[in-house]
Length: 203
Image (cartoon, rainbow, N blue to C red):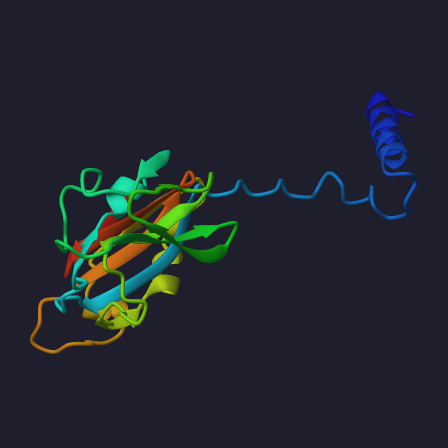
């Protein structure tokens, strides 16, 4: 028996011992492909369309950039750059996602708020927060799956010319459109706005 055959038999025996002598598991062990590395980029939502409708919330200030920094945040005019509604009782409303669950927190003025560890901010408003207010829906086509298909192993992406042809239709005739992409890369959630005909690249 040649030296190569002896080495091959020894490798099979070692595999069988490691797998508890389960039949058939070693026969294809050498041919089993390695697991693909987890990409560091995840596309959460992508819409192509007209976002010109105002998202301003009456008597409120959008403060997600402040809240997203983390740490304990005093809920006050000084923290958020002024008083959005003089003489009125204010609060901080934060919508965030943690462990895949969407949650909402409301904190009154002069108290403090801390974003839970590992959470990502969806929206944050300071002022008189009307719970019935909803952000205007854009005239848009959902292109989440198409953008996600451009993600390459390792967390890079190169989507060229985001336009009506890419989206598969025109959601708003005669209006210059854009693509808004919300993504998570290395645990950080961001939103990118790409003008009509532009490209979305992350290396």
